[in-house]
Amino acid sequence: MTRGSAADGGRLGTLRPLRHALLTTAVVLAVCGVLAGVAATEFAAASAHISAATGRAEGVVEAGRDESSVLVRWTPPGQAERVDAVEPAGTPPAPGARTEVAFDPADPAHPLIPGALILADADRALTTLAFSLVVALLVVGVLAWQMVTRRRAFAQPVRSVPVRRVRWQAGLATRSYLETDTHPGRWIPVHFDPVLVGLPSPTVVRLHGDPLRDRLVAATVTDSDGEHLLVPSGPVRLEEPRGHRTDNPSRPDATVGARAATLARMTRQLQADLPLVVPAPFIGLLWTYVDRGGLLTWVAVTALTAALGLWLGAVRGSDPT
View 1 (cartoon, rainbow, N blue to C red):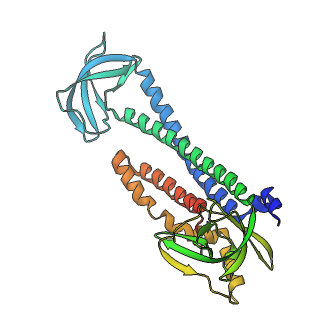
View 2 (cartoon, one colour; view 1 turned 90 degrees about the vertical axis):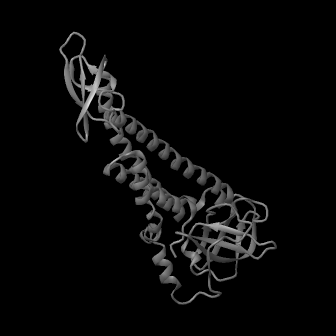
View 3 (cartoon, one colour; view 1 turned 90 degrees about the horizontal axis):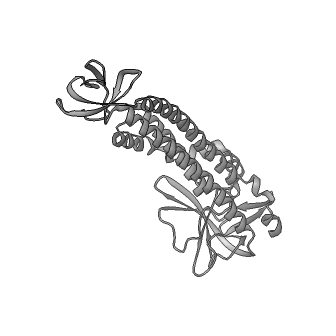
């Protein structure tokens, strides 16, 4: 593939990193869609109750009926005094405290007071809806930005440079880099491609851009199967990445073909990315504690955080090897 064909699109539309990013973006959007749908339904139901409470009165909080509700003694205008139970969202008001009461004139049996559970549920549902929309727009925007900038990277002038394929594992993430033999050295992060498994060390590749000057540098590798485009997964590093380093052997062995075929599968990529979802349940617990939510809150936050972990691995170029 010539530089012109890469710049015009070429095989960019079918590259493995793009398919990986589209798959994980779809997962995030699916989770956001479910959360937004449930939140919209809950918000609509709560809003209908709240908007109907147009009447106002004064009441007095009595002793709690149980741990989940308090009794409020109040008198609707023009009606007899009544005592109704109200579910508080947090710590209930102290007995004897005076409080404003909102109620539906057509159905005063379900009054509201400041801090009522339904008010907190409406606020939580609206926050979830807004947050889901923001996350969905963010992941789509990042994907679009990456597609545009990576296409531009392949349009840069080409130069042949000897490089070594190295992998760094830092924490739960593993990424591939092309280490140049230039002085000073540069480390070009690239998305995984099966051709990297059998890439001799060192080997000469065609770089699209100058690693000494350009922020994003793409690469083209030629082997017996043709040309392979290596998409940059981030900006060129001026210093050696931190973490555990693994170098490619100087010559590939006889198992390279089988290993490359196995690692090329998207299921293998997702399996390798599973460590990135490990923090999700703990983030869900923390969010649930702060938000005073329940099991559904934990499930929702855990699902969204896990999906974002897989998506982050895709956009940052996780390496399944």
